[in-house]
Amino acid sequence: MKKAVLVLFTFLLAAIEAAVTSDITIGWHTAQILLCAVVALSVFDFKCGVISAVLCGFLTDCLTARTVGISVIMLVAAAVFVKLMSGFMYKKSVITAVTLSAVITFLFEFLQYLFMFLIPGDKHISFALTRLIFPQVFINALCAAVLYFIYRFLWKVMRMEKERWGL
Image (tube, rainbow, N blue to C red; front, side, top):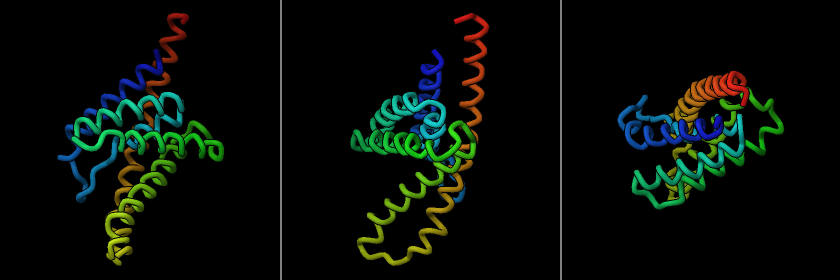
């Protein structure tokens, strides 16, 4: 029950991201809510993170008319990266969620810049780092911190309900 509620909440975040976040910007940057949600959820439970990554990635690809599977691969890779790196960090901590979200965002944004601009001949990497990549990393780190506390609250409420009903 607890895992289903967490996955459904992430599914709701995917629908919100596909519908609303393109209109909400902070200095031309939008938070990648779904990426942060998968990272924060994977800190709590890896299986829930992977299930929500597959379902929400598929939903995002369908709603944004992209090639089906691109978001799924990116989000599952993020969940697997969290699982691999959680052995080196304290498992259920806001610092873990923020750090891993920042690292994953940096890798994703840098690889995107590399393939879209640097390889074809753009040599303004300092501009890209200071104006594009680092602001996106900062926004996603803040988003991951907020989502971590929301997931922790839901996790505790579900645990209290389970104890209350003796399930």
